[in-house]
Image 1: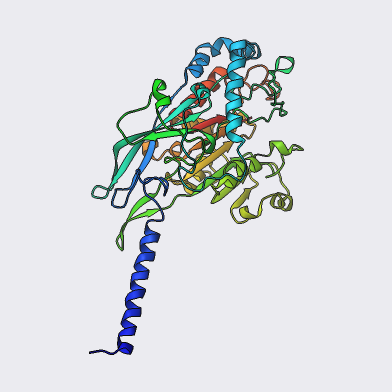
Image 2 (image 1 turned 60 degrees about the vertical axis):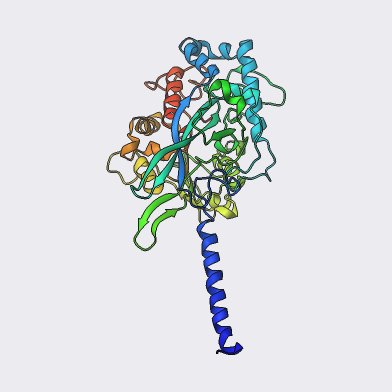
Length: 424
């Protein structure tokens, strides 16, 4: 029989193995399958298959459909149409709601899924349009995702009016006015509802929420929804099926400096995307700024926050859409972004001949064949078309269509699963 001194090494060894196994188990389950929160046990529990959520379809709100039915006529005198009492009232409701959602204290962040508590459906949200999602689960035998029970909805601002903040200054003396909402020199983003600030709901039943039943579900006003991103499965001969975590990636085409555009700090897109996403608990793993106008490198990097050093990349060259060009925009996106990543793309280079081919490619590609449109989660795009009063500041662009065409472009982008917003 062994004495105490002889037994102790075995006890220590056994204890060490147990601790290692516990640490491995904790690490293995620290990335929660289902694209969901540690706090939502009803979505996933140990032993369940890995599930993710995929885009299903886009649903226009009744108010958006009303604008679509009138826009061909309304665009001829858009400022007069927006100022009609019913539309002024609707604009106040929509902009007040989006500002309310975006005005929460900066200390409130969402670092995991479903951070915020649920609440009831807000009456103002009937004006908002909806992105729909389905749940799919991974079959390790076939290495495929199959449709499963579960349906989700996330709101997005409707396509209405000038596709800009109706309380900005573009209509001159006809511009709308709302208490607490002043003109922002044409750069107002008050109408935009980014994903982290867009109410969402989901269910694991077979029932699909409809416009008439939205108030029967629990909603979260902020945070990361299950369809934000997902794990990427792959087969590894050493461990079997492995799941790779996603990245948060931002590409800013037409970036200028991070903290200022011209002499206007309020128009700085880099700072806006940092504040809206990165600082809210969704840190970017890559932040790519592209600007064709010559920038001062020292000045550019002095403006970026400490936690973007090493993450922020400045490409002070122009990209193209020429086939075979190593600076082709779509090819670069495909190299950098994986389908499981969360990818925010801003396109505003004030040049329709360059912007149009990019949008055309996103609209016409085949997502099942690796089209880049399947990679874009959120798009901020200033569509330069010809209509009064925007044909003045946009230089009266020719051959690019009118406001009616712009409506169709944004709707069709949304129908491909892209949260497309009209950027100022």
